[in-house]
Length: 150
Image 1 (tube, rainbow, N blue to C red):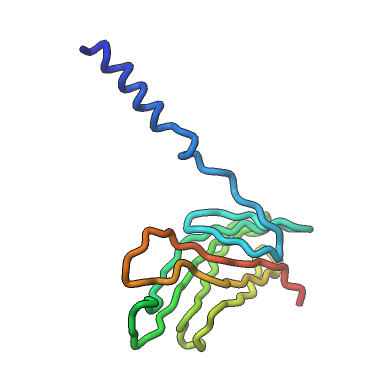
Image 2 (image 1 turned 90 degrees about the vertical axis):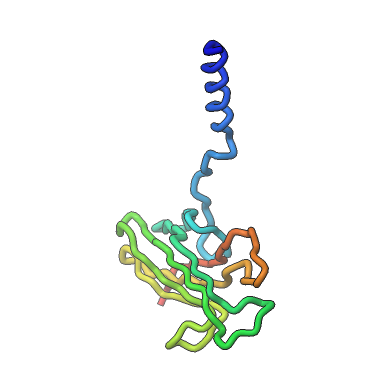
């Protein structure tokens, strides 16, 4: 009986190490290109000069569900961590919806300086939009990053 136990454990262990579990390398996009990514993912924005590494640290979505009547519009906040070779890490917070004291907005444009380089980051969308019926879809954001040439 014990002779079968070790080979069985080895097979189970190897079965857990399939290719789908291996995390892919960071996704690369170009400056000015719209992209989507999920919480925990990292994206490298490339172009001439300094590349920018963005990590989607958290998404908090308290917007009014589409199939509900609410007193408050709600908002979706996104926290990004940005870095380049000049700066270790900078936390950036963005918000769409009712982001008081700011007026309600459908997109957020943020100017940020990371490692001495000016960037313009636009949060275009947080999806899927909330609904009363729970969805198994993973939240993701749609962004575009450009070098700010003020």
